[in-house]
Every structure is written in structure tokens, then in C-alpha cells.
Amino acid sequence: MAAVNDYFRTLVERFGQGWNRFWFTPSDPLPLGVVRVLTALVALGVYLTYLPDLDQFFGPDGLLSRDFVLQLRGNVPVFSMFDYAQTSGELHAFFWLGATAIGLLLTGLFTRVTSVLALVAMLSIVDRGPVLARPVDDILAMLMFYLCLGPCGRTLSLDAWLRRLRAGSREAAVLEAAAPTPSWGATVSLRLMQVHLAAIYGAMAVAKMKGSVWWDGTAVWGLIARPESRLVDLTAMASPHFDYLVNSWTHSIVAFELCFALLIWNRLARPLLLALALPIWIGTALLTGMVSFALVMLVANLAFVSPATFRCCFATRSASGTS
Amino acid sequence: MTTPADSAASAEPPGMPGQTPRTIVSLLLFIHLFAVSLAMATDTDSGQSKLLRDIKRRTPGVEDYLAQFCLDRGYDYHLMNDLPLDWEHHLEATIYFADGKSKMVSFPPSGIWPSERRQRYAQMAWNLDSFTMFAGSSDPDTAENGTRDKGLLAGAVGGALLRQYAKEGASRVDVKCVYHLGISPTQLVSGDLKERDPEDAQYFKTAANVSVVLDERGQPQTMDVLPALEVSPLAPPRGAGGRVFAPESAEPN
Image 1 (tube, one colour):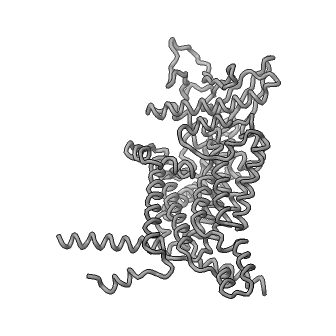
Image 2 (cartoon, rainbow over the protein chains, first blue to last red):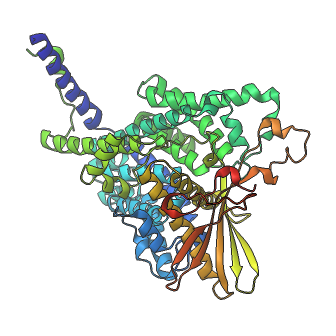
Image 3 (tube, one colour):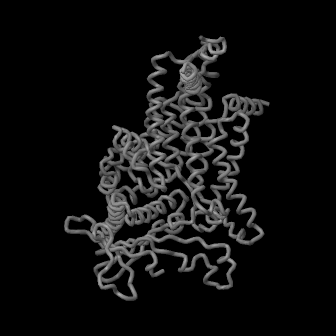
């Protein structure tokens, strides 16, 4: 009995220690800054592509009237600033306010506030037209939500530049702006991205494994055969000579997603999986035409890159820039 | 008894938050991860268990929290499972005018750029097909919601077009959701010219066809358009909500 008690006591203690180490060990906020810049860049691109169709979708005589969206939402209270736009002018005014917020997040000005405003803008446009939402919107919402929780403007931002400017000759402040002190807020934010992303890869792999085309190796052909979406016409691969290529491409997508979900936590496997993500997502973008989705998934993967790697990359770039 | 190894393991690195903020943040993390896990387990194409669905519905605030932050997602992006919903969708809206003329509008419009815009229109059409599928579900709740949402979306699109073309005398709009079935490698190398043409009519299937008119209050009213049957049944088959549904195999494509 004592052995059982000891086991459970140790289990709880070790879980607690592991939990604290995982979520609260302070870390360099640089990866969060990189994720912020790139997420905001993709978000701004996706957001601005609403502009040509803004009136057609959400205008007073638009395809998706406010009444329709309110009925579709049912009893779930969802806030969208575009619900309050009665005229085309108001709609465009709200739109540009949202674009400004995302632009400020990109530059890193007043990041604590603008990260929240940018999230509100992104969620508002997605929730105004829920039947238009695509996978990229889900991933953007997830990343922007977690960016709000951490000090994402501590590096690579106008905030950091202004801090350095205000600090003047005060050495400590200058050093802090150049190499910020580790923060547990950055860890919580990055860890949430990592856990959520690994779960998403797992869900994607499981969803594919339920379909026979991912087992018989013909799923990639199915994507090739969608003429409007694909970026390149690969129908020449209908020839039996390419059967093995189509099969291996199909299997490699599922294998990658499954491995990512499970092995990304292993330090040795991590660099390999992050490197493999590049050809996998470029291939997926070419097959499906979902460029922004592929981009945002690659950006999300950066949450797993160590601060040392980023510092090394930036040091190499600045060294090559000065030489 | 605490061993030296335990003491070393429990030593906190500098900069870690104190006990109280750690407890509060841990509690919030548990709640958040619980909600996200529920969303991922219940929002998939494979359905949901009654247990998890009820936990999600009855836990105060969970559904609202997930919905507000767009976290109510299963993330089951399979891209291709060779099902009707996996192919490319578009809407063909035929506007009928009082003078007997008609005009067809397609969503996405042809030549639309960039592809982000095309994908949004295609997603709208995909949702109409998706709601039509739900409307035919054996689960009464799903069928009721699917029927309602299908009518709402078709009504919104048709109603908007009727308002946009009101000056020209638009009186009715038929909103047709069509998906473009992909060609197989065997069909692509077939000797039959029609069979190996991916744009041939045989590869376009109608998923839904809804007729929309505006009532006296300007609200859209919808009714499913039935394909012409070779032999009229004595009593037409009726789906949920009293609306008439046509089986997929009876489509004229």
C-alpha cells in the first residue's frame, strides 16, 4: 500500500515539476517576435484580399446580409465590429481601421494593445462571413490569439526601437532592447502555439487516415485533378510511369503530419521535421492553391525554432551586411 | 524523504513566476486546453459522441469562448477523401426577370484574382453543399439545422441578387450549387474524347438547387427545385421540414 502511495505522490510531484518547467521556464522572446512579424504579414495579406469583395459580401445589398449571419450564428453570441456597419461607407471605415491595427501589429507599435485590436479585426471579418472561412483563417486566429498573451513586441518592433531611443546612453536599457531578458510570458505564448499546432497536425493526419485515397496512394491525384484550385497542371502524372511518385507523395504527406504531431517534441527529430515542412507545404500549396494556408502553417512551425537559431541567423545576416 | 536529485529537480530557474501567478495561469491553461480539446473532438466530419457534445454544451461559457475566438474547430483538413464535398464547388444563380428574360451569375466569377478571393466564393458554395448533406442526415437535430442553414444561405444569396437586380425587374432566382468532379487517370487517357475532357458536362454534378423569391416584406423565401423525373411518383418523396428533396442519383447531369 505504501508503495502505491509513494508511486502516486511521486507521479503528482514529477507532473507538477514537469508542468512548471514546460510552461513557466523563462525564455527569449525573439521567436515570438519572428512569429508576430510573419503572422501579421500573412494576416494583412489575407485581410486585404477581402477589399474588392467587401460590398458584394457584406454591403447593404451584399450576398451575406447581417440578418442572415445573425440567424446562422443562432444563440451563440459572437462579436464582429462589421455587424455595426449599416452603410457601405461605415463598412469601409471599419475595414481600414482593422487593416491599420494589423499593420501596427506588423511593425510592432504599441504591441500590447495592437495585438488585441488586430485579433479583434481578424475575428470580426471572419465572423461576419463564417461561410467564407477557410483553414488559413482558423490558423491565423489561433496564432494571433496566442500572440496577445505574450510579449510579442519585445523584439523586432518599433516598440523595441523606441525603448532604445528613449534609453539614450543608459547602458542597461540599451542592452535590454538588444537582447531582452527571458520572459515566462513568452514561454506560455510559444508553448500554447506548439501544443495547439502539434494537435492540429495530429488531427490532420487522423482525418486523412480515415479516407481510403490516403491509403491507396491516390489522394494527390485527386488534388491534381481539381483544375480551378491547383497552381500547376500536373495531369501529365496520369501516366502509369508516375504511379509510384503519386503514391509516395500521398504517403509522405500523411507520414510527415503524423511524425510532426508525435516527434516534434524530440530535440533530435525537430530540425529534420522543420526542414521537411518546407517541401511538404510548398507541394501542398502547388496542389491545392492554398498558398496562404501553407504560408501560415510554415510560420506556425517557427514556434518550434530555438531562440539561439534565430539569433544565429540574424547575426549571420548582419555580419554579411556589414562585410 | 527528499533525495538530492529531487531537490535539484525542484529548483526553480530564475525569472519563474511565484506560486500564486503560476497557480492562476495553470488553472487558465487547464480550462483553455480542456475547451480546445473538446472542440477538436466534437467538431469533426466523423461526428461526435453524445457525452462530449453534452459536456461542451453544458459546461458554462465553453461554447461561447470557443466560438468567439474561432477555436471551435476540428482542424480535420483531409484535403481529399474522394467525397462530393472534396471537389471544387461553385454557385450558378439564374436570375429571372418579369419580362421573361434571364441572366446567369457565377460565384466565383470567372477570372477572379487573387486565388484567395476565388477560394472564398468556392467556400460559400461548399457550405451550401455541406448544409444540404446535413439536411439529409439521419440525426433529427443535424437534419433540422442543415435544412435551416441551407435555406438561410440560399435565401441570403438569392435575396441579395433579387435586391441588386430589382430595378431590372428581377422576380426569382434559382441558386444552384455545382461541384466539379475530378477526372481519374484512366479517364484522362481514354479513347473517348468526351470522357477524357475534364470540362465535359458529365463531370459537373448538382448538389443543391434552390429557388428564391422575396415575400411582401422583402424577406427571401426558398423552395427546392426538383429535377424532372422520367415517371412522376404518385406522392413525391418528402424530406425534413416538409421540403421536397431529390436523390443525388436523380440529378439530370
